[in-house]
Length: 160
Length: 183
Image 1 (cartoon, rainbow over the protein chains, first blue to last red):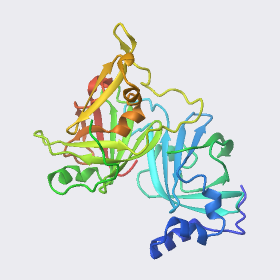
Image 2: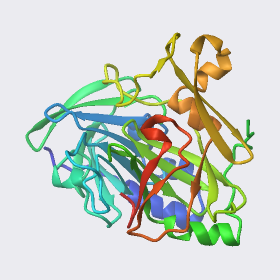
Image 3: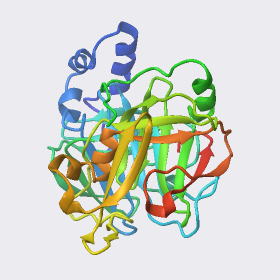
């Protein structure tokens, strides 16, 4: 994975500016050249993933203000859900930053520290505090990536 | 049918807020009363919005709270902000998505109606439904129009059974868990 960061931009810095100045997300995007264009098709839509080995799925929502939500369906867990799990369904929220170039970049997730997820233990894509390769896509696109030795199919699907 | 204004409403102060206090910032897990399967995770926010997570992903929405019932439970009506489910092409059918048989009529549909913060559902003959009613038999259509669930005053770590699930699967019951944090 390329770690090259020039020219780089970071949405997190933009989000802080929005909060401080009470600006709209649109104003924020305009202040960070390239950022809005790169992620524009992701906003309001769903980045969906499927682990081709386990068939676990995820839905990721990226908001223009730097927040994200990720939802996982890990499949049957083999025993009933208890107060400490195991859970077949999980969700997570946090903030993201974006770095890299406008054609191939990294989505760096900063989940709100809380409960350790089963998806994290399973090293599912988008489940850990890490940077993930992503690229510019249009709604309806389907593509494949490899994350920690596992092949994933990804879709950018309309709506949430 | 309960008509919803379409915007989130702040939680009214008082007894209902106290009953729901421990749900905020935590996760209400609903599991099948019969199977114990993990079916949904609900994140309620104080501002009147929520996120409901199920095997089809997350669903943002807003909720309305009814008057506290005689049994001390508060009805919470959930309205998804979308009537769609986002799933990739070729995704396998959801567990339980196969409709039950309707005696003598083939496959039954489940139609829910809400009145005065109470939702009741029944199996009906799909041929008897109008186009609008048919739309409401899908999970997304149902929740877009609002589904009400009574919630009791609970603490994190509590596990209980709720007899008032309006949906007839799992004998109309839920196993509920109030789990710390958002998961």
